[in-house]
Length: 165
Image 1 (cartoon, rainbow, N blue to C red):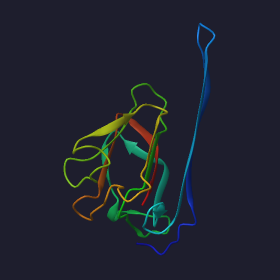
Image 2 (image 1 turned 180 degrees about the horizontal axis):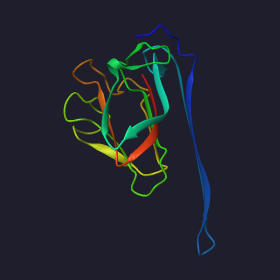
Image 3 (image 1 turned 90 degrees about the vertical axis):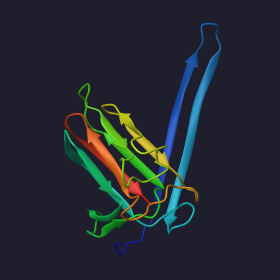
Image 4 (image 1 turned 60 degrees about the horizontal axis):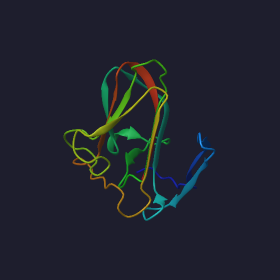
């Protein structure tokens, strides 16, 4: 792991709106959630962050190794997450059909992020996926045996990824 200190990481989700019914009823929607992480490896803490915006993926799959030698942090140190506390993916493509798929590979996948090997989620063009697990039950990463996330694109394109643990 690289020598770094996480000075703070915050995810804030705001969803607001209003729905008016034909009978005059009104529903106001306000969801305002905030999650803050400090440096460390306990509850509400992260030790390392991997962030890559506009990551190119050319109509193929790639395995993101979250505890190995293939992915590095901003200082060039090997990514060595022990838990996945936050995962964010954004499909930057806008063309119809250019989906981004995030899944647990058949072997060596990070368990408990998805229900089983091969399970995942398809993110449509312009879509996003945010996963937050601040507590002790966050998915555990085991180097070499349970440390991969598989990313696939339907076409050439780019996506943003942020992993913290």
